Structure formats: C-alpha cells, structure tokens
Amino acid sequence: MLTLDTVCRPHPGVIYQIVDGEAVLVLPQAGQIKVLNEVGTRIWSLLNGTLTVSEIADRICLEYYVELAQVEVDILEFLADLEKKEIIQVTGL
Image (cartoon, rainbow, N blue to C red):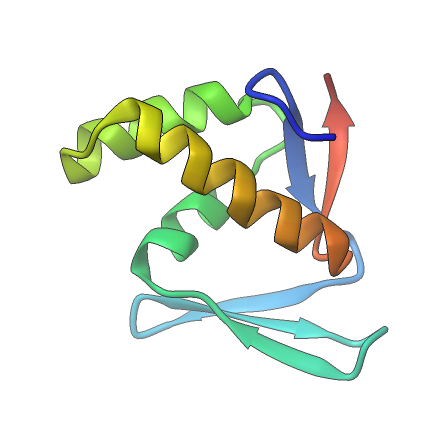
C-alpha cells in the first residue's frame, strides 16, 4: 500500500516520451498506450526513485497553488492506479 513516505520510480519496461507537454507511456507488456495530462506528466517527471510521495505533493502544491491535503489524496490515488497497471514500481518505504 502506498503512503506519503513511499518512493516510486517508473517501471523499467515502460517506454515514454513527452509530446506537447503530455507523457505518452507505452506499456509493451500490456500492449497499451497511456497518455498523462499536464499534472500527471509533472508527477511522472518527479518519479526519480528518490523523492517520497510527500515531497512530490509539496512540489505540486507550490507549482499549481492547490491545497496539500487534496494533492496528497489525488497523488496517492494516481500512483496506486499506475502501480496496479505495472507502470511504476515502489522502490522504498
């Protein structure tokens, strides 16, 4: 289960490219393509295997001027979905 102390990184099998400000993720194992919106792309860019979910939420709050509590909930849901689809890996707790 993901928490605010979780550290994530992109799954090594996912191929991605940023196109017009959106991350286009190719999931070869599932034969799918997923496109992330602007905020999803920014979160994706912060998944470097060193930042915690909490640290990512702090950055998103500063950049988009939104409330921290809501950002934390939204990011945890977003990352849980990516983990379920094997798009990211949890690297530390």
